Image (cartoon, rainbow, N blue to C red; front, side):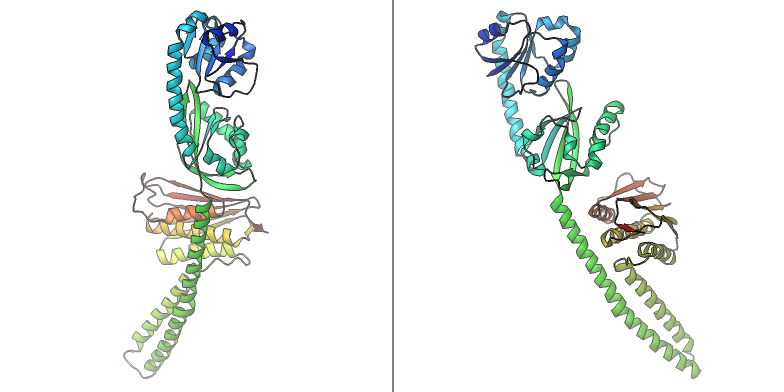
Length: 443
């Protein structure tokens, strides 16, 4: 058993002799390893920061303090919550040894149980203090981030995040400690991590808080979802390919057949009309219906094929989407364009368009909306797609057997590294906003 003694009264040798244990006198920010017990004999305010660092990095140790520390209210107030026992002299300390040993055995047992779970779970686990400094870091986290434990302990956790997240991380902690308003604590969400190699990757993150020895700590549970994202991307690619195939079949197959039937029907209607047949008017009606079915088929086909990006493709597609919604669903659907920057990446444009398409469809079918506004606000730095309706909104708890529309919109947003936000309240409509930062654009 290794004992660390913080001593200004020079009684460490006496204490060590009583305990008959290996001991070290703590000096400043020396590395702390393998310590089972910390004895605070005496100290001063100058060393207080170092003491707090020591105690925060030896959470499983038994802490014993000399009663003289009670006379200094400033120091005692800072260490009181982490002290297990008090002693007056070496004799009293000696009498407390059986109790101390029992405490050490119990703590060692709990430490082994914790280590068995902590080090063998498949999820990465990182524990930080209120200043964001890493206290514990398991093997799964080593595999995910490619850093060893020795490389991260004591560092701010924000170095494991890309700049877009890291610059706000400490502010989120400070805001939570000050206001109690949670941004991510207790709420699972997908964020981006940064590996040692420089690779930015998607991960699911759940954060909770707990207290240990009077100190508030935060634990993050991390799951690397890179492979899942690749699979989702492939599923959507295949889905888009199949959608395009069906659209082309409708256009080139069924559409052509309906066009042919319409032409034959028109010729027959004209012939019947020339012959003064009583069936001429009905044949004209059949021909008109076939022609309308042909138009609808071609419109559906255009909705299924990939968005064309040449010229003003994205804006034209959204404008047509709104026009078709008005025509087929009898709702007022307005398209608003802000900015003149065009999205030139086919994946970004296609997925944004599909999000708008799904949102408009949901607004009509599930939201019972009468008015929908689709807005595309583009600039060289961002593209923001907003779909707002005056429908019934979402209930507080979504049904388990609901469709996958909302989930698919989320997948599409993640694939293009966009942020999808849904603001909905029962009876007050829905607002869906998809923000794409740094899109591939052209003027």
